[in-house]
Length: 235
Image (cartoon, rainbow, N blue to C red):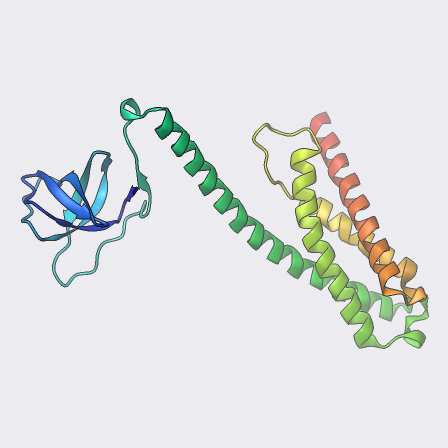
């Protein structure tokens, strides 16, 4: 079981300053910050390296303190690690990186979806105002606004993940590039989606409208990302 900064335990023996503590039902060696801590006292892990980490006594009736690196795993020092420890540390690093990436993806997709929704509504409003494809005579405004907003939202989310994958895996990029969405490419993709929407809106076939919007949005996004990469190389 890993020991983390902020883990709570109880002293099994007095710490003078070294002794034993129990954390998660396991008895371990520990030391205080230089002060004496009696047996049977609640303590919190503050720092250190396995096998001798440092604990601090929690004053009775007081909440445990929180530290800037609260939750960080306490690891062995470099000279104590074997191949299994190094492999486990690498897996843990990958797990943490993936967790952070998923969190960034969720936030980014939500922002992209909200932006796509606004663009979709603006696209419908402009089409209605300028009587694109005689929409005033053929369709109700709520249907137009709803359809355009839905397509804009869906396309923006798809474009967020598509451009992130495209920039990191298709275009020549840094070796450690994993997921790099391009806002400029997303915007261009939404323009393509709007173009596909109005090119086929008069047909009234939502599947055709959606397919053309999706196809042109991906094409515009890929082209813009590629052009942006070329400009960055030349400059």
